[in-house]
Image (cartoon, rainbow, N blue to C red; front, side, top):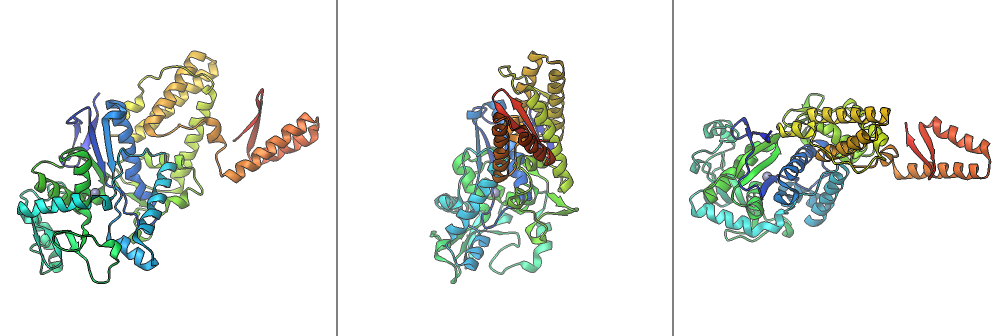
Length: 461
Ligand SMILES: [Zn+2]
């Protein structure tokens, strides 16, 4: 089979053919770092992490270049810095760190390149200059604007015709703009803005528009045309439409051959968003659930479909992971077999069908259990290799089963470790009443002690 991807640009599922199999390029829009991110913000990071893992498997880890940016210039960041009376960098640094911390918990691989907008001002200025020279942009009193009417096929990604935009936005027409749908490439600084949010340009001091940041960073690191551009469906219009307009008018070449969009995360039937006030922050969720459970829950729906986010989804994900790790534990000692390509890989090749891939992973766990029931050592070794290898494609099952079973917060684990140690000491001193008392106490908390030649270990049951 070949990798099939649903391309938003052609509205079809197509075979994926990279321009250069030795350098497959992927760009995904990253976060604007002005606040803690909610679980919906992590859906693209996790979905495209699976794509990254799959491309690395197909083309080789050194032949995939993945750029996911950090937007550290944006109006919301300035507002936040002014509110708190701190420097821009204090805001962007804090929330970029929090974002990275969350991604680590979700087992999301670092991209090949993580460009920050502030490091690419010269690239943005060069692209805006090219757009002015080619007659696609104009300067007014408020900034530099992209002229949407100058592009014959503007709107091709979202399917919106220019006339549609005009009709809806007529009331917002600002005198200095030629068309309602024209958008800012560069915004001149207003008098009360903090100095660290103001940059130099040939047209005047100010800052770039959000869209030009991605166009410039994609071109700088991946080239004028990239293989795959990804992001949330909420970015399709206007953000991605405008990225296409800028890049294609500046370069005379397509920005991306494949456009992938992930669906919304819903809470009780409504899109999760800061403006609706129904957000669940990942950092809060992590206090109750291991990152791997959250990742599993995010992958339980197909990336293109909306995903209904519920407590039930999380507890089901946890139960399933407990079962998968339970099967892995039974075959854990049998190392050394080579994995074969499994149904997990095939499911992902079909437009990243993660629900099917997770079902295939459960099937591999059943194979492990059957092999363990029969004590068929060869089959156990094969099942172990397949589970770990297929799990790696999904970013799951990469911990030791004992570490999974002992998960929980560090203090709690330390307390249990100390009790298990105290029981060992009691046994060594032949104080069996005390040893039994500790075993009963832990059993009452749902913790099972396993005595082995190397000492005692424990797991939650
Ligand atoms: Zn973008």
